[in-house]
Amino acid sequence: MKLEGHGKLLRIFIGESDKWHGEPLYHAIVKKAKEFGLAGATVIRGIESFGANSRVHTTLSEILSQDLPIIIEIVDKEEKLNEFIRMIDHMITEGLVIMMHDVEIIKYVKSQ
Image (cartoon, rainbow, N blue to C red):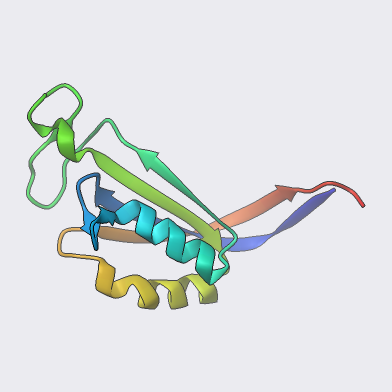
């Protein structure tokens, strides 16, 4: 069976070295998303990026490869994601970016 509908995709761009109370920030955000009951979350590790400070982070450089880009993608309804952003706002620091996009969700589930 296929379930379809409109939703939002939240993308949070952080660095691999970002921490929250001693644990990786991406892990802390995914745990909060699960506790909050959001539909789903995925963490993607990038291989190269640059941001506000224009410094390139890449796997090609041994020195900068310690802070590769991380993208956390979370899908749900806009209202829930807005509430979630308010909940994690204190965890996000300067230079990090959050984006929200309209998406059409197609979910395949086992027929009953």
